[in-house]
Image (cartoon, rainbow, N blue to C red; front, top):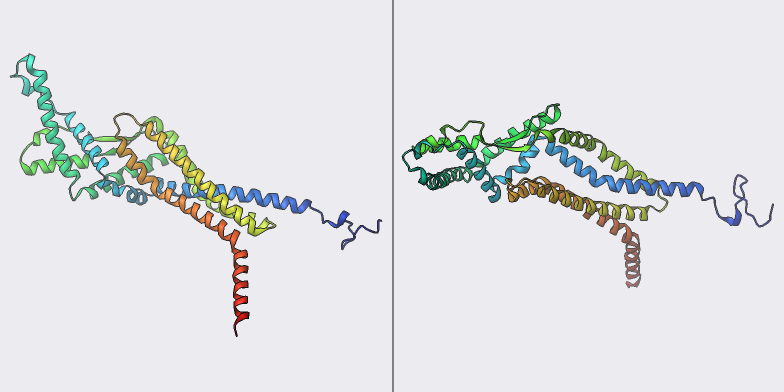
Length: 330
């Protein structure tokens, strides 16, 4: 045995006096992998938890869309949809019998425009009235319960937003005024609906629903365990905390970008008859809390990384200045 080769306790000889690096290197790699996995899972768990609340909890969904009752774009879309539903059942053939055939198209257009303006005015009074927010919440509560039941079952029925309560309020308003009641009397009670989810799309959304429901239960503990495990395995925990905070902030930015891209593509795919401003308001209401949570993760990760990087040196410098100041006192 060479005289220069140091002997460690237990009889093991290490060349050059350096300890074996195999186990320590594997531990560091495992800790780094866990930190990366935890940083990626943290914003995803936040998204899954928020999506699960809006998909499965009726109160959370209604609370999210309740402010839309006062949104101008949404109010205009509701007025247009209800007015279209009413006008689809109004027939002017009997009124045009006394008109010359050659003049009927022009008279029909003029009558239709006047009747539409009248109906839209009545609907607008209801939509902008004091009682509309409660009506709005009731409509969405019913729609969400239908959505939750359809996604939990195995059917393929379309999901609709039934605006019939708004029409019934218009009926009541017209009957009290004693004018125009015949305009809405023949409209079916289920004739004013907005299709939220088409029947062919229900199985695909059901798969997303199942994934979100399971992910909201599994992702948060997985993210917590991964981050804690990575910090415990790290050899230099302060710098591991710096990297973990930076990785969480980067993952939050990435998720925010993906969310914005998905929102833009979903709005671009809407059919022409759907109001883009109203749909954008819906998207803002449903994703606003999630985006706020994502930026909260970004801020927390950035702050954690900054404090971990500057904390001990700054603390030592502060203690040194304090000790020096105390030593110079008379």
